[in-house]
Amino acid sequence: MRLAEAFALMSDVQDDVWPGWSRAPADLLLVEGEREYLLRSQAQPPRFTPAPDVAGLPGGVRVRGRSFPPAFLATFPAFGAVPTIVVGTPEATGKRSTAWVLTLLHEHFHQLQYSDPTYLTETKALSLSGGDETGMWMLEYPFPYAAQSAAFAALARRLADLVEAPAAPGPEARAAFWADYAAFCAALDPKDYRYLSLQLWQEGIGKLAAVYVISLFGFVIWVGLLISWLFFSGVKPPLAS
Ligand SMILES: [Zn+2]
Image 1 (cartoon, rainbow, N blue to C red):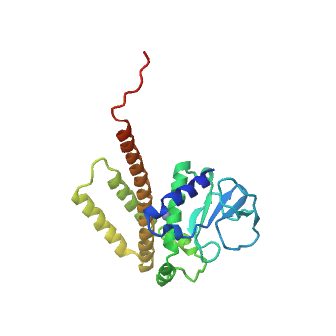
Image 2: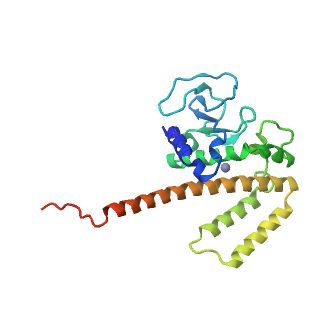
Image 3: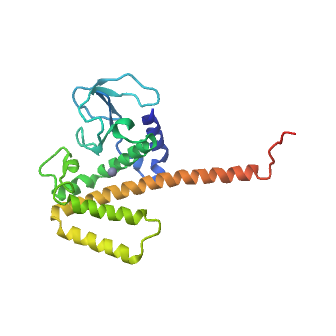
């Protein structure tokens, strides 16, 4: 099961990547078919009953009828203050299984960010929640889906083109992009600008952590190759005569 793999990967790498990551909450709700399974959680939301143990997964799994959409994928305080990853299966979320595992790692990094003691007070201080106490405002905030969606999509497309271009963009192309980005931000409602800044910080650091995890694996493979070379260099494979 991919979930067991994701948990194993988390516990292997997290403290190498970010000190204290293993102390972050790891509550997870898996939405599968017509059921949802709550794992690694101390929360007591209604209607859950104990589920039979599954090999490779932690015990104490609880199950109830599905209440989230099957393709849901987000981390937010779903059951009280603790940030919970709510995730559909790889099939339902349209992700290949490796991408799904890495996405869980990314979401688990958000759990670390959200559980920082200052996160709640500081995001509250942005006064974007419109009085919502469930945390859903972070997912349902209208920006950038409302009025500015076309301008924002165009900027995002240009950034992607710059990053994906075969040659690194020159200084003028970069300066032109940042000038347009600054103009876009200046034209935003101050609330939308605060929301954008929050998301850029959150997602930027989350992506950085994922890149670090992948690099760490590259490093492990290189060290393995070096050790193999130390042991086996000069050894001739036995040839059939
Ligand atoms: Zn994210």
